[in-house]
Image (tube, rainbow, N blue to C red; front, side, top):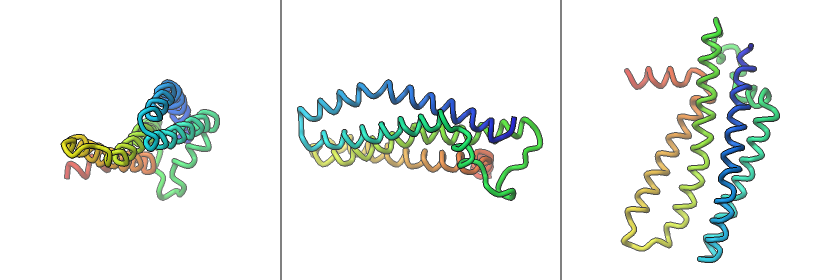
Amino acid sequence: MQAIESIALGIRLLGIFLFVMLLKDMPQIIESINLYKSVSQGTGNLMYIYLGISIAAIFLSLIMIKFPISVSKLLYAKSIHASPQLSSDLEIAKVTGITILGVYILSWAIPDLVNNIIGLVQANTYAAYDEANIAYIWNSLITTILEIIIGLYCAINSNGIVKLISRLRA
């Protein structure tokens, strides 16, 4: 099995996982839209944006399921100098695992980013004594941005975790 094929297998598995999770959450999203529409007109429109992003993520997961080799070619290093030397099946597994881990981190961090941005937009409706919730949203947003950076680093650079650990140890 080549490295591209093993990455494609992981991409397909992540696509199936993402599809199932989004379908599981879709009734809750629709119910939230109805709830926000009954409470306030302005915040209901934000939920439509969240619904649109969720539907786009469903299409992305279907692309990951149907065309995993094309997606893995986008994630795999293009040049010989940038690609890792694959000397054994263990090296292929390491490259595959790191890339899949990066895509997995991105699969939960990007929806969290959307959720945090919606929370910040709604923060102007919070009362002055609700500063703890606003601080929590900002902390969540900063954490989510760090997760996205780590996920991108691992997905794009297949030796990302090894380099990250060596930098943290030094």
